Image (cartoon, rainbow, N blue to C red; front, top):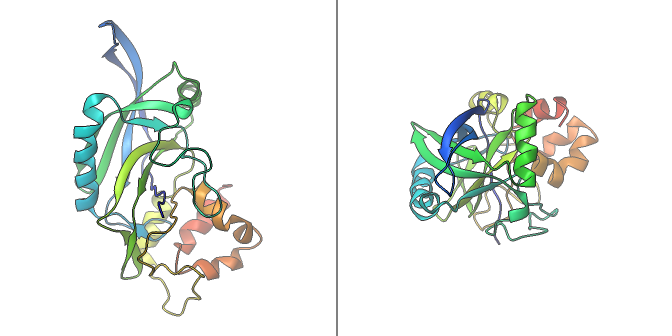
Length: 250
């Protein structure tokens, strides 16, 4: 089964107006946003990490196959998923052009960070919305979209060698913020934790989501009724980081 995965930035996305050339060779000013797509080898709220060697491999592939041809776009929010993690509208490998908000023009590694730069497409409805949010002072986040399986890695899980990065979308709520980083470094998963029906030790591909909206979509009804329910998710989520995100009004 295909699944969607995405982790997002640690620092705010930087936005600036830069000189670009349009399809007709005319110089134009474009709204460009850039920031951290993901920090490798550190688990986020979902206790899931992304090895640098895999992310760098996928970054180079996308740069050669997609970015160089002007074909790697970003959607405003991930494709919608049902409770099982399956796409509601378009397959996750397909780009919903009605939701495209930006064109990715560069991906590169800086240490263990995947850096992303994209041009906001203000001519599209989604791009116009994104530009309006940014100019109004809103700080969006980046979130990877991909497919693959996961494998156990000590007290968390990590993506497997079969991982395929599809694109980086623009999303509202980080699942890989400072709280997630801090807590994943200081908090271990209890060996006595009560497991969910789906154990993180499953190595077969299964639906995986990383954005806060997606976490809430799958387990949110139970979690929202009381933080005590998070004990059941202790082996799947970074508990303190998820509580912190919930208290921020997600």
